[in-house]
Image (cartoon, rainbow, N blue to C red; front, side, top):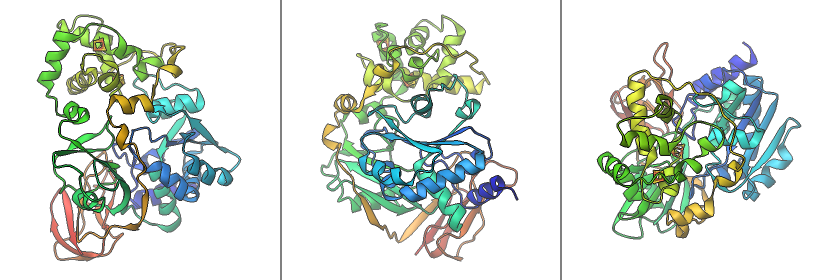
Length: 440
Ligand code: SF4
Ligand code: SF4
């Protein structure tokens, strides 16, 4: 078996997925050939404290994971892109770098972690609209994913644990390591619970995250944070806003000030995407250049237009999301070319300090120290779909004894997917098409 195939096979067996986004199966990604392999260590969502601490604590495993990734993809150059302010991570990584791997220091701006922006900042290459990084020879992977790659390749260790930052209006902000399937409520309890009664919870970051409706839901391979905020907090209200309300405000208040477009990161680096024209087109029964509307398909959903740029609380992003759903259902594609980048692009990306103010979360921008001890839940509910692709098929039955790391969900034959493993020792108490429940 070639080195590429061997690495990919071990990564597949361990169930590694992209830990920073939607959970694309890593073994599929590693099957491509690349020139440059980038570790995305930006962690630009305000309040998240996972990757920056993992890079400091597990620098060695990260560099080894990167080398495996480079070997699998044939990449000759490796770049670890992280913020200049992550001093402990930089100090831990610098002595470990092989000659063909360098650090790239990112400014403390948002969205430095949007992979299209990370690539541009770290290499000067620009991903054309509707294309993928690999189309310009670049592979990007998340910190946790590459640490998991190192564990998979060197120890055949499957993915069973997930670090999660618990922060915001909680007694003791911290970053916890939880077996996959642990109820979110247990993480919240370990952080001391909420500091106020009227609290809502956001999963992921305040910009690109989502409201958590049930704290009984389990941790998955892509869970990065639980953020407690008051019910009337601007971030929570933004998430609760109905689509009817988004459309009504857009129709009645858009003053075509252009700020959403002038600050759109994708537009700044030379993509057509002009949110102000999409809002205008929508307000006037889709008049305008058809390509303009189609460019909504290239929106990264970074939320800059909605949460930072628009002075009258319009959400071009929500409009783009709705348009994307319609266009994808019709099989439409965007085919516009890359244009020249805005000469001021670098200076128009948003400093995190200003974003914290705008989102009214400065008081929550505090350390959330990574805890050594792994949580010990009495029961886990391990979802069979924690990734892009087909759900895994359960390969265990009720009453069966399983050990942590044992395979419990297999990729369906011929499908895109990822394997799923038991995260604790125990007895399987329920198996459904959605999840396997294990009681310690
Ligand atoms: S969410 Fe808004 S700012 Fe971000 S890429 Fe989409 S249109 Fe641009
Ligand atoms: S920033 Fe708001 S008001 Fe200005 S053009 Fe964009 S949607 Fe309209």
